[in-house]
Length: 231
Image (cartoon, rainbow, N blue to C red; front, side, top):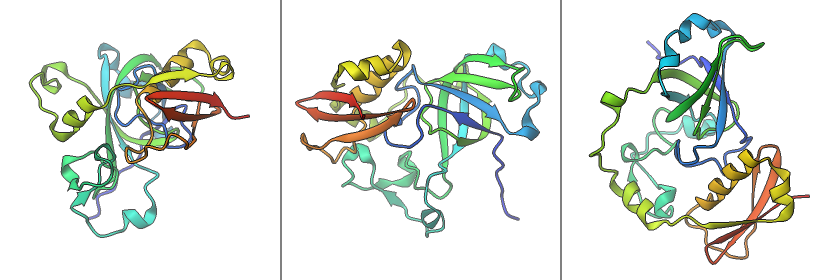
């Protein structure tokens, strides 16, 4: 029998494209998202008891993976961007979207639950690492007594993360004025984590990311991100 997954919801975020989206959930805590349920799942009873939890797990679809990649034969290794894109690791030792089933996993904090909106029940979260419109397959409560492992080891991802220091961010006056305080703080956190592919290190190259309705351009010179808003 075929195994089919039905999206129960989608998330609304400030990222219309994938460039600039944090590489993991929770890295930029200030990023908010609205989980809006599909019509057949807009039942407040399905959320009964969720208000007692601080965090949830989201299982979602890497919906932007091209169809030709989805139908391609299984590849046991991938090139993680964190390793510069030039070293292969086993697909099951990474969180790459290029995997047998293109399912993402994120842990996010619940900010509010509104059971009565024109869109039905809506869950507002922070720390999301998803594009706007990403389909969500399931929501499960985060259980600290079993999901939290203080002695866990992060393998090569943790080792690489120790080597990457946050960058300093310098917003132009127009960029600073283009966002409210909340979005401005989140943007600085996004840029300080260096959204470029890790095999890019060109001080003359200008990058652009779409965030909160604006096109933000930036370049990185001597560990300083210089950012401005495209006109």
